Length: 294
Image 1 (cartoon, rainbow, N blue to C red):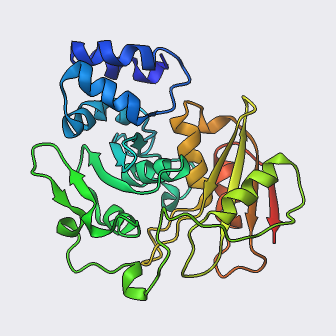
Image 2 (cartoon, one colour):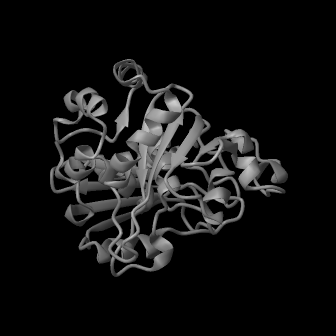
Image 3 (cartoon, one colour):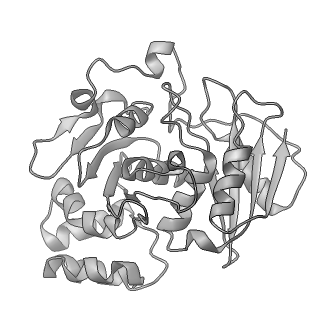
């Protein structure tokens, strides 16, 4: 079992511990459960979907990186596939506060990067802030996305974000988590650049058309990719580097072990990710960034 889960696991009810042990015993647990695993957990524990997600929140929060706030937030997103995806807030010492990732953003992005087509609900241990409500409003789930909070009746995103402004107000047809391929090609480079290009082709940037993708190589040799997730309100947009860091962290690796990175984006974009990506990587101890402009 990965060391970060030990304390949280010890505090879980015994039936859930027993059901989780075969899944968590290995260090490479991907911070998600397949629909088949979810059904098995529910069968062994007697928990329904909502109760299981609440019970798993301590494990999700154990993935939090919060050296600035010391405030650890976990989230669990449930896809229409039946899969469950962890999310956790992330802060980066030495980088600007704008580079942080909220737990809800993390869970949404984790599901998106794992290939989930749409979310049915998200469970979180603290009320989503306005930033996260606006971020989730970009999803193809729309305002019908169910929000589960401790000691509160289930509500929809629309209940938490009345009179919302989002992509539909701007007649955007392709929403966050919809399948896309922007068709960029001919990016010169190695496998790291190729994977950043693939991420760029799947990014969500309907307002600026500034598609971008990042690929990170960790000390283990594994490659993690991230796609830009643009928002109708602009500020809640999630950079591609942060998307890659979400998956890297939730996969159990340290953000301080990145050996090199590649950023692929359009030439002369309206919104460039280069400066922020370089600065945040430097704060994480990585100065090997290849920048490819299409």
